[in-house]
Length: 294
Image 1: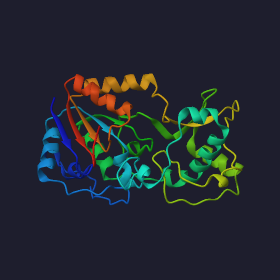
Image 2: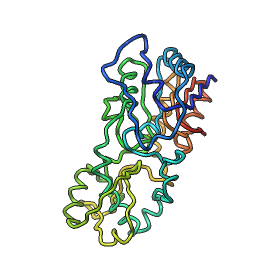
Image 3: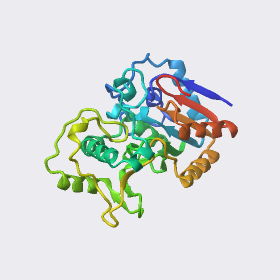
């Protein structure tokens, strides 16, 4: 297999590319964010490697991770010094803990309620628009994202598979009723009119960090149809990606001729197995990321 490992700033190289000299309507200005790890400047040689990879590909399956959204103000988990794990001891809620503990659900929804306005207003950055442009050129056949921020969809990409779901939808774990997350926010506001907190730090799933004593009186949402437990329609840590979605991803990888990884350490197996499949099927692979990948 041909594997180009460009461990340099996530998308700066791609931003500079003009495939077949086609200009784009977007200004790919690099947006600086406090959540972007320190890095060395991109080498021209690496840019050319990526450009050759794209020029020589006809159907690219793009796999994106949290690193692609840092310039949109959403931190990743693992980056040195700036990732969430480096900033504090917070770890994401585990799926089984969410199911078993009403107190954990209460704290989760209180934090999610506070973080939602900032998270939901996040805008695509030049990296998302670069992927959309390559899709419109016919180079990208599918966008498989590990993120739940829906920024690829906001950027205009059409064939997007949200591997871990989307934070913009809520599902009942009992009757499978679904709700728009904005509707849930309105209901939570009515149920908790005096609950006020401000935050500057929003997590990749829309969660924030607030003290436990401030969440003890928070009223979490319940299904309007059956009174069941509600959960954002995202794959929590410790949960499994739906089999139907896994099969859809496999088909898209099989029908592609190459795989481009953007902003992912590939630590989570649901993303890493896509690369294992690509290697097995002899696809050309390019990795663009700050820091090490799996």
